[in-house]
Image (tube, rainbow, N blue to C red):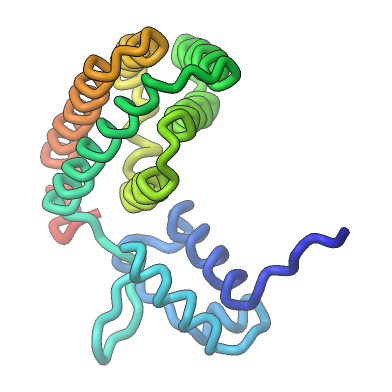
Length: 225
């Protein structure tokens, strides 16, 4: 059975999205449908459709008479993203604690062990991979695909900052402790504690991220990052 060939729209969407998330195009940079169409050897119509999808996801903005621009994050955006993350992920972790599936519970425990090892080794790539996988398992345990998809989109909106911020040695060490408490609460079936712990973890991340931006980044990028 042959694999499904992606549409031109999907090709353009994945190409531009990857370039944004990997910082191959910078915050505030303008991109055109013609340059993407040339790169992919397709027409401009599916590229425009892909741009609109990315605008709906908060990754591109359209400015009349100027064109499409890679989104720029301001402090207000960070605070809004984390306000939503806290409420939604609290719900997901509370529900995850009620899931008795032994396979998922084992996967959660093993993935936390991988996260702890990555932090000990200061392996940034392994840390990001384990952290992403751990939260994906929690969302699967919660059984709410729409909420999980919404969190995924929120994470993509601050992805550029997340990569550099999350793997700082001090943040990784604190995160190991915070995730250990969270995983233990979920495995113990304590939904109330899991809800509280993920909320505290995300609030800690928000506070530290905002402080870092204010002290070290935004003075050199007054319009955002």
